[in-house]
Length: 56
Image (cartoon, rainbow, N blue to C red; front, side, top):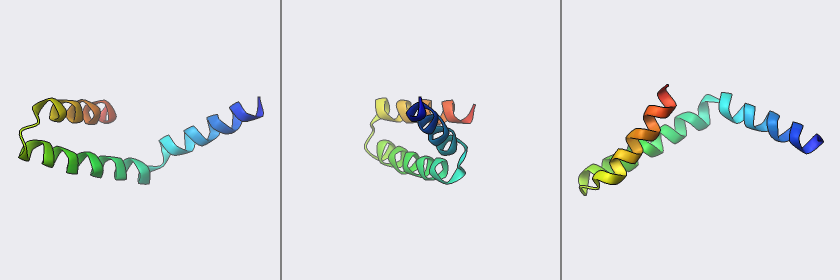
């Protein structure tokens, strides 16, 4: 039970912290640029889906 409590608290902290989220969005932006450059439409759709889910 203690492990569940600790993991729940840790997960909550990660989700509420803007820094990892911003880092993740930055990584997605770079990946999208590469996908566009090389015509990787399937990967680009996946990236856009992830971003859309994060934005609400």
